[in-house]
Length: 484
Image (cartoon, rainbow, N blue to C red; front, top):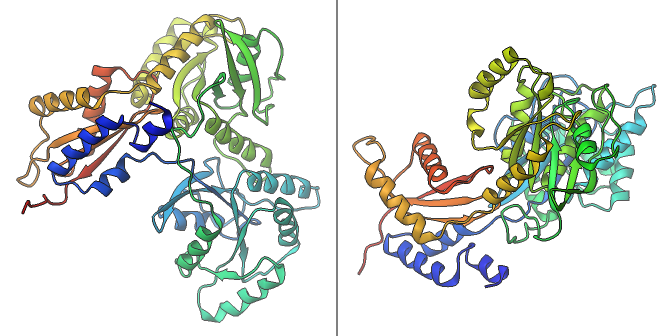
């Protein structure tokens, strides 16, 4: 069966799909809703939020995604290195890119401003240009308008900080920018945000269908992203596996700015390694290049199939390390954790490192671990087997019949706790995708997060899934269809 045919049935074979849909109908689930659950998600269209500092971009991002995630303070330049978020409006999903604002000043940062804006716009399918309606258009806005026009990307103009009818007249002055209708919005209070998002959907493309969970076409060298915080040894590792100096290495943290793609022969195979810029914990206004280095790192993860996360084993595990690992997991990539500078560890440090791993990395115990030295090449031969193991887990598929036999035994031996006099039960399930594995469970009631984690743990014990995150979604039967 071709990949195209398999994709039509949510990743299942045609006969398996027919049997599954019959089971769903028997249990009272609507066929269209089941199809929606099985459908894979295509690569999401990207909306870049651009504008000068302190016009309310991060506040608007929080409004669009419906939760407070982007850092907001009443001063410019506080946007940190988590820069993309998933959003949904009117049933359509898309990705929001929070680019951060940068000041033009007498030190010549205008060139940096232009470069940063161009990068954000380059990665986007459409642009949401945010202007402070109370301030109006400045020279910075004029410069950004020229950049947007040169890109040819569709644009929606947001006149922010319009808190009432009295300030709508100020928003009207922004027609002078020549970008079409300015949509008056109060990102803080939500006023006008619905009309703005309706306009955004008109210029964003629909998410195309995809055959695999990662949106990447199969074939060619496997793609490996090297990620980690600054100066952890990513470039040194790349040079070591390549057997030559391909990337500049300097003791000054953050010398790598752009992802560097290299085709490298390793373990008898050709791999495409992507050396990414280090991710800093916080990016200040004066460190614009570091902010956009993190944006490029996110883009590198989007291109990769497996992420090798380098951790400096000689130092205490930092919040940056756990957050970077979370970035790879959230991106749905296979994960290998490489503890670098292992040759510098004494017995005491190794003891404390094991305790730190048990405490801080308990959520990724499934990730293969290699202890290496990028400087000396120690244990470098273990890297390829770890990557291959993670990729194998990432692409593992469990037949629906075998999965349901497993779920039946699981429910019988470990039923969901009774809550409110009711005991929800998993009725049946299927694996709706791979790369990473995605499971859909159909149940008679709400399954608590703790029970879903238990199901994931048992799935891993039974079927492996080493080196890959697992997605489990639950579809609750609203009411049983009565047969006439």
